[in-house]
Image (tube, one colour):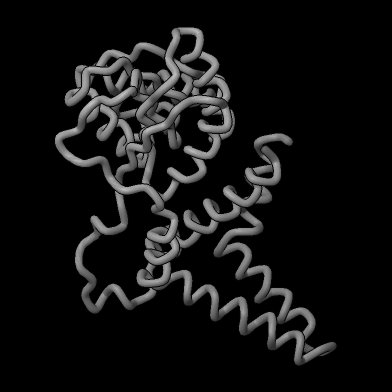
Length: 251
C-alpha cells in the first residue's frame, strides 16, 4: 500500500475529518431521513467537542502508557544497545539551511542522549527517507545527536517507513553485531506498539519511555475549554489505538 494512500486513509478515519464527514452526511440526508440525519449530526458534533477537551484527550493518551519510566539511577542489566525511534522530520529549513527533526523526534533524541550519558551503550537510530526530504530521518537524528548532544551513533537504519519496519530492519542490523537485548526509546503512548513489534522480531526489550501525560501541568479552568492541542492529542491517541489493532491483525 502506497504511503499517499495510507495518509489518505488515516486522514479520513481520524478526527476532525471523520467528524466533518459525519456532519456533512447528516446534512445531506436531512430531507430524506431526519432520524438518521440527526443521529449523524449528533455523533459528529458531540465527538468533535469531546476530542477537543483536554481531560478526554489526556485520558486517551494516558491509557496507552503501559510501561513506567526507568528508575534512576539507571543500571545496565543485559542491555547492549540503545535504540531510538524516529517520529518525523521537516524538509530543508531556510533558517538552518538543513533538514531538522520534528518535535516528537527531538523529544526522543533528548531522552536517548540522556540514557547514553548514563550508560555509555552504543546507539542505533531508525527512520527512513520520505520525499521531498533529501536525507533519511535516521541521518537527521544522527546529525543532531552528534552536533547538539555529543553522542556518536553506531548504526543508522534508513529503510523503515513505520514502526513495524523500524523493528524489522533494526533487529536485523543489531543481530549482525551480536546484539540481542536493547533499551527502546520512544514516547510513552507509543511504547506498547513498539515493544510488540521489536519483541516479535526476537530481541529482548527494556522499554525506555519518555514524555508521559503525568508530566503535564495541573489542570486549570482552561483545561476544560475546547482546544486545538486537545484535538491533536485525541487524533494522536486514536491513531495509536487503531495502529495497535491493525498491527495485531497484519503482523
